[in-house]
Image (tube, rainbow, N blue to C red; front, side):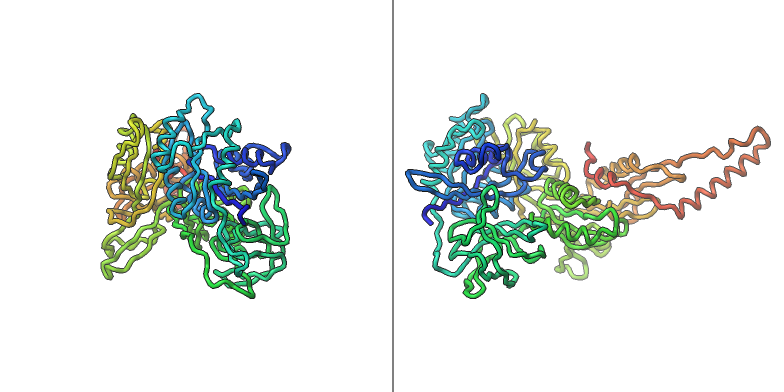
Length: 598
């Protein structure tokens, strides 16, 4: 076991994690020149297109140091705030972490939050100063920032360039010297932590685990402690670039397991694997439960695809444990699911993956957050409101509480004004302003989560010219003055477009929603009124004008009463048509509500 090292790479978005992983794999000879490509561990097309890591990826390398061969297990992690759950799982399976900081951009918000996550798990931190070869790099100043943050010596910070390969050998040596070998008892009963899983249509569920005590052998009867079910280990092995089957995987190592499980719900990420005959007594701790931040309805375009969508979501949940969903139905859209996501990017990625990996075309409703409603009858009884249609009647309601977050924004001192006014516009209250250096400021705000769900991140990047980094953590529920705004089409409420809004913003947003829908809904043979209402009170209205057919075209001259008779007949027909006609809402209308400020 003393020759094992388990480590992960943590950093802010775009600080060079995946490129550094590529260089480490090349330097240790884990990939041949023919196999190597940029972002080697990012195996989804979506990750390559966007240049972001969505999934954690585990891979094993071998490295000879001072005449001895060491086995290094690397887990590459995502950098975006929406995928912090992936990071927490990777950290639980490691003893050390490379903290990568961009020499041109210095420490950003996500760097700090991932670092705290690693320190809570007692990981050994190796600071790496990346991109030192850039003309805009400022290595001395950024090294001082890292020293202030970690309290380490300046000599401990390794200058490197993942692009050109500078400092890669120093990093590998530091991993072996500084990161402790895994602790564990090879003779104890088997205890292994599941940190990831993927679905393979041919072989069933592939489970990725880290062995803490004991060993897992091929053909062994094993037990999953959360579900209590037992299986045979058909195949075990380690994760090289391709899976490498072995007879056994010992304590301290990371590997994969195939048991032929076909049902995605039987594997829980964070579960403990043990031996069925000699089980361990305690489960492994250290996993936080996922807390969804944003809720949206996902519905199949064709109602018959409901079961197929359920299967797709279960397989996707296996690959992305932070997705939470439950069935719901809507009058406008039929049967679907209420899904919980970690943020807007997460929602977008899930929607893309459903379309690409499972060929499911889906309709997504307006995202919202989860509220607590209290009624007058029983003031202590909490009604959880994930969907605006669950909100009780205003007359019976005592109060509504909404989730608040602590937002931490790091930006250049030139942009403090615009960032502050954006946060205040989003109902934020400033709690702290801290100058990290004369150039860089950390601003802390208490804000309602609902306000950052839509377009906050994009607008923050715009007002700061791309120089602001943003991170948030929930701080509980607070009472708020919220109203439910309904959208009525032709007098019928469209429940999928309802939204819970703060009373001060309700009129403006209601008006914008009506204007947006007027542009998108195709014209019919009759007038379509589009209304926004709070309860029975209409607060905004737009009308999609009818397509006119000139029924008097055939009258050449003649008496006016003949023309009037034809127009009256047309008027009655339109009235009848309006009573029976129903209006189809295009998919763009549901998504356009999110982009009201464009």
